[in-house]
Image (cartoon, rainbow, N blue to C red):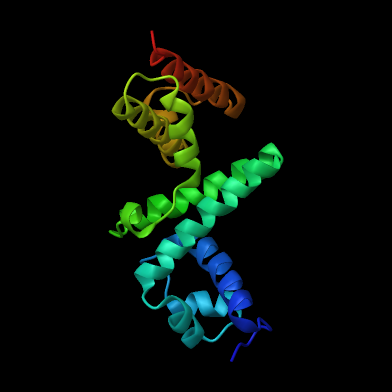
Length: 184
């Protein structure tokens, strides 16, 4: 039985993934119970267990959902602010899950955006390993700034750096990484 009107497996799964993603991004999986997710989603907590099984499987499903959602947004040419919000949410869930001790890279089963980026880098780098390493560096750069931007600004004396200047700097660093690996 649901308490919020979601009916059928697909609706219950959809509202559960949305609620879990919000809560995991806000406070992390360790500080979020299945009952918290059920309350936010308006479903019975037993349905979450039925459709996802363990909390680890729910975390993996949320990570897969967020990756697919972002890939769909990018393919549809969504507005920059929507894409930025989706990226921020996804990276926060990845970071919080990892910091909480969940093996996010193992729980997530599909990485559509990373796969697309690797495919782009293959044409620019002489080896598969170099292309994959470049993608890992690009992701680390984005993840680090999104999650630790306040600390990085303060520690490097960049308190007056605007968000636009930061975005341009990150884009420049990513462009440099992609150019540096170009095949000769």
